[in-house]
Image 1: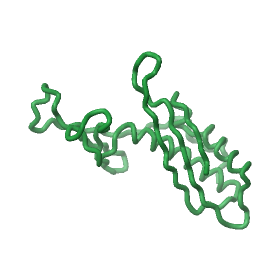
Image 2: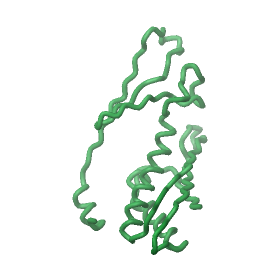
Image 3: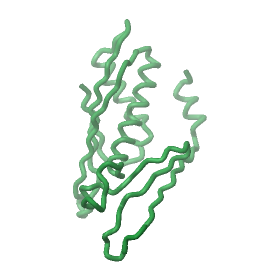
Image 4: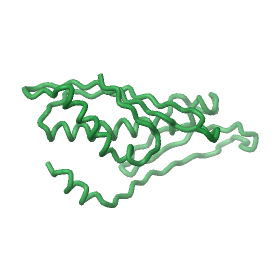
Length: 165
């Protein structure tokens, strides 16, 4: 496995692309009663059905079955933290059998009255196995280091709280 310095040296500049597509179809549009359903197409070809959140735009103009931007934001933070945690744990020879995070994002008004994702709470449940099991201090250090290295956490002003089980 590469050390952290060599990973950073090879990943100094990266670009990430996605295509977001929406179509009016038969809606009038100007009456504000149009579907917010759309798709996200990622560079690998995966197409994700997306929509506004039903907390923001009521059903049927939103589709609760689709991913919304707020959910994806919480998922991106959780996923980034998890990926760093897995890599750091493997580097320390800890074996992880499963990692499940029931992450929650909280939207509220900021000091200017604008809605924003003020806090994301990560609640990972991690199952370790093998002969080298981490102590509570080891797990806390892994979470601390994962948070410090997470690209997404380093890119946002949202408070990120980790409540490890």
